[in-house]
Image (cartoon, rainbow, N blue to C red; front, side, top):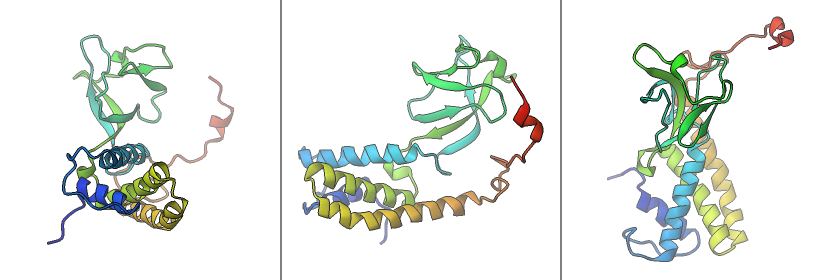
Length: 204
């Protein structure tokens, strides 16, 4: 029976790229296996940080704490206020910082329930990401691992074409799931703003 790619499958693909035998579990203590797993996790985070349809949410309600600050979950890679709110934010000390007003206080952006709508990008465990993204992560991680562990230029060059095809597959998944068009997506998010001449000469 065909199954989705597991983390063990991903690690074994990485190992096979440098001619290593597959393993039956990830708890053997073998340093090469551990390095392969760490590389897989690293590349997974890096690729997910790009922001894809599966790990991005818009107007996500984030609750203010007792100090009217927004504490950011550890699995939140990126966090921003919606476009057009006029506030620039940055992650600092595990909280969201208002760079425009120089404060951690977001009470002015909160609704009646004490929630602030934010656009977020999450990081998920390998098993929880779509198959097309998994494939791209594994191929990319295999190339990175080959270059780092054995310095194999041949292995990296051999896998570059696979990596290009894998990314194309990931982008195909993205466009199919997102239903994008030139005006935004099917959910009305990221709506296209037409050119407004007055905005060009507007001064703050």
